[in-house]
Image (cartoon, rainbow, N blue to C red; front, side, top):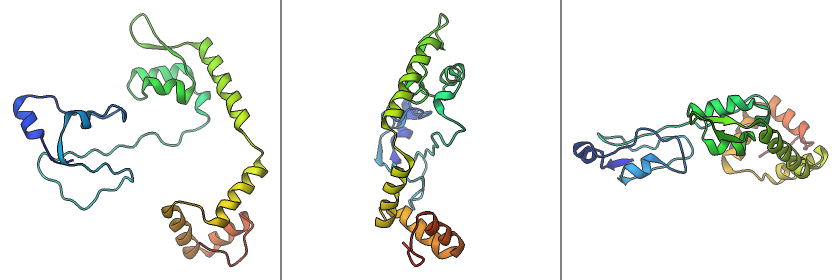
Length: 182
């Protein structure tokens, strides 16, 4: 955020953003006004130089984990929520963990309800699943049509140009002709 009102906020003792842990309830948007805002979802910073009282936030949310999220120990999910690493609403939607408030006010996993919720998630997954050969056929059609967002198409194109070995493996996997390229 460039050209912010932070100097005035500080001088008046007004509230200002100190963190931004919930993308649906942004402290930055609520507690700071700016002449220019650039919310870049591509994780790259544009060419504008920063000035005093400009605001910059760089966040990485999540990332690849090991295993199925609904196999995670429910007590571990509750601990993450209590420690502020996971928002409470995501315990249910991402991990299938049903939480309730304990007598001390902290979140506690309800094991019985969690088992039921996770069974529902597994059943829903199964009802939406399809055979691997059908999935492969649909994805091959996307490859043949080069139906990818521009950065992905460019990545595949440059990878094929930089590594003939990789290009040959890609073509072989997707059963493409030897001269096929992006």
